[in-house]
Picture 1 (tube, rainbow, N blue to C red):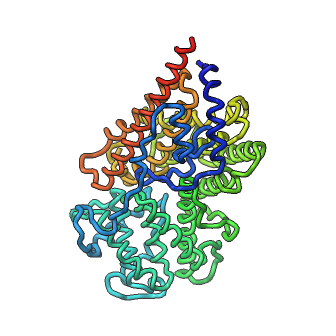
Picture 2: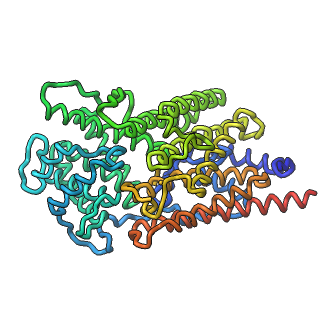
Picture 3: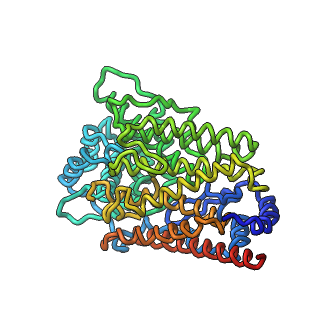
Length: 524
């Protein structure tokens, strides 16, 4: 039920607050290892900028508690999984071979093809026997690569051996080798290392600042190794395989860069004007990886068209035109996916529930929400709340966010206690990518929760506000119920931060509903 009297009483106050901050506050506020830079309220204000907080207080009568969004200095380069500093040796060579055997058929290798087995054999020789070669010319780079690969495998439940190993230990060991890696020549081992550490910075440590520095490093490695150029066939089998794998690593860097840029609002490290974006041949990659590449290209367009500094200065007509174009591009991407895995806004086309399906569904709903959420920056909508096109676009953003959370609570996604083991993004039964999926999904849920929270504050007396508030409050409990008792120390900390943050949003949303109800009753 819409209550014009409540909206009318606050409309003038909203306009006054908005005029104080039309430029985006680009400070990267983070929570649980996730940056919130591009999140804005539905009146266009940066979510947790001073003016955004002022608007939230005007709707709720409460101050925003930012304790859960203040990054603390990281000690992840000093401690291990047990919290005690010590050096970590390379795993036994036989263990690495076992990890390779288990890596090959895993879904993780199709989504993140970091490693080429034939080329990694040269890395093993350099790391364990100091037998450097053209393919692996640096010992420090090779050892860092082995540690990073071990960490990725351990964090994704691939390793089934008897030796007790911890992903965090090998992440820290790889970090310690980075100075030597950077002194050596720019190598394929070095690029593999920094990209795998990018993933570990999300999955294991939740450290977005390390991730940003690693992304910047990997982008320079990519250019030096010519990964930004589509490889041309040469009559040298090993050299051509090296070029193909370097190109694959470019795409992993590109995917990570565009996802991170949209989440944080920070400029991307890779500039498309200097990159050949010719897609790989389907015979040289997997359908899952190709789907992720196509989406990353779209995410880049979303960032540049809606959330970059240039986009902030566009007119309402330009903004809405860009939203329409991006919505059409998202539909084109959706239709490029095989029907069995194709996502939908509300209902699934099939009853297939798998990890690839889950990831695609989450990415689709997230991208749709981010595209249409930008319509909240239209000046006419901000001032009058009656622009039909912008209003309907915001409604799509809310519905996409609501659908994502409801599907999670209804167990329509591929989750269980193993999949929820690690606290990120992005972007989830017994499955080999288990722990990674948990970390990828937090950012999607976080964005969806913030969208519903903003909608409640804008329309606190709508009929669906109570249901949306219940959705917000239910997500942390649903996640906690699916965590195993042996969750690692760092991951447990990330989950606790997430829970506290969502509880704070629930408290503020409840206050907004109560305040609006009191105003309504006082005027009737």
